[in-house]
Length: 282
View 1 (spheres, rainbow, N blue to C red):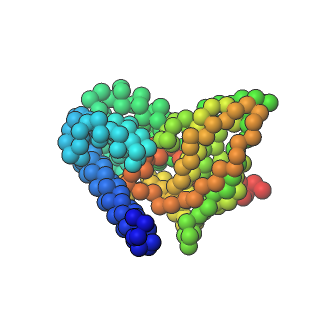
View 2: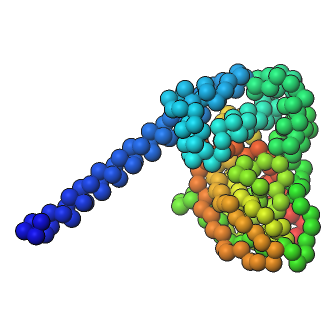
């Protein structure tokens, strides 16, 4: 090897690196296509009873491998993703149709209306009937923790809008897992993306979820576009909060919501009305 061309080894390594990179891109693209097939399968069969084995067959993976790659792509398990999109469709049907709660529960795969109503209330924050009466909004967003004092901390940072996009009212909340459901431990509404500060955050491990609507947008359920409630989203976590210890700055960049993002289940405030009321009172 001492007599070899000095440049030959680096060139071979470079070629191998390019080959590995191309292979990695192809593998990742194949994985996302497989997960995409399963997500489509879920949406097309919400009323049916199917198992993780059925989903794995759709992805053309073994059950173990499928569960692992699905969680890597979406951030949550296949079962939790399916449950979330079933409740998301229920939200749409409650606002956009006159179907009864019982009919809706069957359409989204629940055999018991009692179980459906219980899951809906715990995830969305209100019962199906109240959600319909409110037109898809919440009259308030209660927090799951109401304490304050020296055993808490703060989470702060900056929310950045997508390049060239017009973003308006922005909701942010801390949740115990990557699905924005139930009551956040702390939340806030900004007039637009920018600096934020959440105070009196209790110790724990949280996910910071952000959603933003354009200045002329509607934060409610879009009946014409059931998969796209909120145009721009961002998530950061897990964020570990320790009592009395400042948390490093957490910055987030908003992006258009995608097919692999878990839907926002909690009932959002009528942000536009809340903003107008706040301006009128100031």
